[in-house]
Length: 137
Picture 1 (cartoon, rainbow, N blue to C red):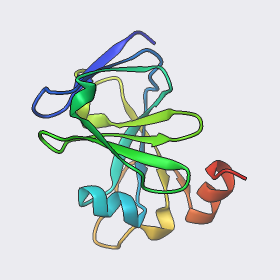
Picture 2 (tube, rainbow, N blue to C red):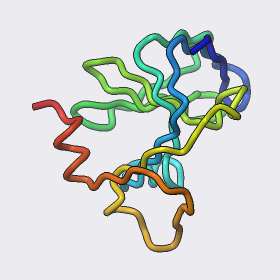
Picture 3 (cartoon, rainbow, N blue to C red):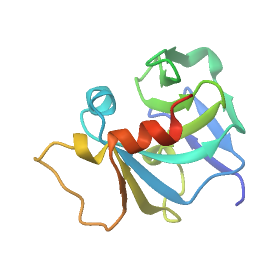
Picture 4 (cartoon, rainbow, N blue to C red):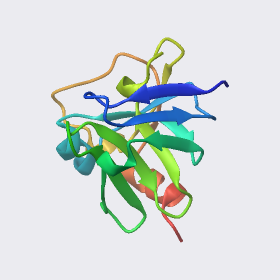
């Protein structure tokens, strides 16, 4: 795909992604829901992400293998990033053009609370399946 751009709510952090996926993934884990008040809906962006306004990015070390970035001015969630691979998952709502996205995957489906449900048909993975596939061995 071509380069895609986005920014935080206040515009203090802008980013360009060179290899963006067109798939939206939702995470229902407790940490993501606590971070944003609901499921985290992200786009896989790999490691080739360029940021402008780095001085406005704060990174929270959220687990052994991942960290979360946010804008220290407006609080926008900027990324969930795997530490070792530097693989970025960026919230779908931050991108300028969202028409290309297709809702594809839900992870930690066994942790999703009963008060919401998506109508879209997606791939679903449990907590155990996610950890088996993605956690460092």
